[in-house]
Length: 388
Ligand code: HEC
Ligand code: HEC
Image: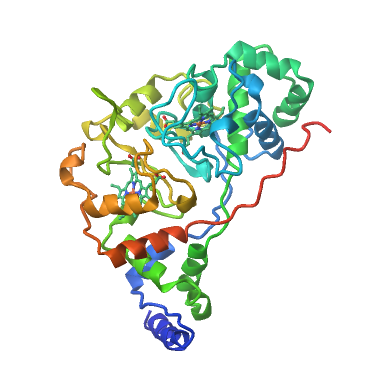
């Protein structure tokens, strides 16, 4: 550790000449920063989805993602989760047949989550993908119509056979779920590239002075705040910058006057009641190992008004922010954490969020750090034919 500090001090001296600097990092800070990597993680494979990880399934899912015939209203997944716009729509709240109550989240890195949706009402990516297919406010599809399409469209039937190793069968509901499993296999491939933060993180962990210097000093100060006094990393934890769980940050939860979004509380009830959760007969995990969390999760009073902790990769590109899109810019988010009133927290228990009272410079530092979590993403080529 002494050696690392020494190296970094040398970096400061040699870097200052070029207007660059590296701050001193304690062993605890290096460990904290290190825990936000390495990136990218190993590809996901979900045992509840037998075609998870299969390229043929991802190809079918890519087609289904842009397929208007899944919907009785000609709406596609890609209308709301727009390719080339970081897989979201940029609106404060999603727009289906009517305006929805929540914002359309980006789908980047979604395969690494364990609960899905702002309220965690789904415990797998395929279960989450079923909801918009059937929801009358979104795509308003049905099992018979979707199953018929998979059976009767030559290209889709062929894509299905390649993905699943059998022709589409007669069971409509099974075909509906299989379609969602192909959609999940595609979405699991949406992994963001490395960022300037990742290069700094690796340099810090390896004690590589030249590489550490490339990271702006404002971002370094912001990162120190993030893992230190800001307490951000308690919830925005690990390589994805989320602990995968739910939290309360004091965002108002009124949907309309007199109507609240109960968040995680209602999400658990919906998860438990659904035939499509990991405990149901559509899970392909015969061992049942991956259903343990679903079996044990119980709604507690504190879950009221909690929403899933969002990952922060691509954060500068995916506003507006929060589950209801109520904060327009990243500056607004930082101001929120700086000034949040404890009275606005809904849940009981010890609050993890408290007003930070950041100075102008500290706010700028935190923003500079957050913006180093963005990466340019290559344009997705059009889907190749399913069965050339
Ligand atoms: C009308 C707009 C709209 C359409 C169409 C739509 N979505 Fe969404 N999507 C949303 C909104 C809004 C949410 C947040 C829902 C919530 O949390 O209650 C969401 C959430 C999700 C999530 C959860 C992401 C996460 O981080 O947990 C996934 C996955 C997803 N959608 C996939 C799909 C797929 C696949 C389709 C097509 C079958 C689709 N969506 C169609 C608006 C839409
Ligand atoms: C108690 C856990 C917790 C702590 C501590 C916390 N956050 Fe959050 N953060 C959340 C949750 C939960 C949301 C989503 C809230 C909502 O949608 O209503 C969120 C949302 C965000 C968003 C917007 C993400 C999006 O896609 O909408 C950003 C940016 C953010 N937090 C950054 C920070 C920073 C910076 C800090 C430290 C100053 C911090 N967070 C501290 C839990 C936390």
